[in-house]
Image (tube, rainbow, N blue to C red; front, top):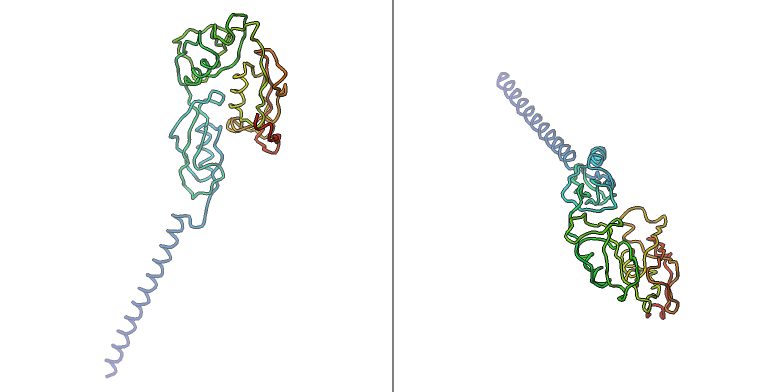
Length: 273
């Protein structure tokens, strides 16, 4: 009888021990799984995406490694005023909160400029020539007036003070000067009011009035190329006038900012003009 009781006690202890071992194993597995998932998903841990703009791809990769993200170049553009091969745009943007290991897509400034064909602008009006240059990705740089019977008729086309023949392959965004006719009976222009206009729109309006850009002065709020495109004119010299004329080809100085508070508030009458 004693032997049977001893055997039953041993068996019972063995079952309890196995149950305890199994329970401990389950707890260990659950804890391990939670730790593993927490490490993999970086639960509740977010990183701030660095600003890669204007860095080389190698510099961007080094910064990405240090920040715990990765970068990949997926597209390119050509911006003449920007360093070749530098990062132009990124997604997600700088300062975005992401998980560790997140891919940041980069658009870089192409190393080689896109080539375009120089059109034949001779014989066109200023407006026609401007439209043709824009359609080719070229930039109107300066208006040069010489005496002729037809005002604003294109007589010559120049690149870097040299005549450029139609059909010549040149870099996109190349600067083109136009030599235009000027009749003594039609040689005056009014200075338009471009305050409040963005950079490119203001420049276009000045050229549309047969005037040149003396310089673009950006204030401290303009820190990069993108800022310069969104900057607005807050002052101009000479001031606008619809009664006082200047000579065609005269230059206008524009002062630009991204600070809306610096833009003069126009009256109802000024807005309607």
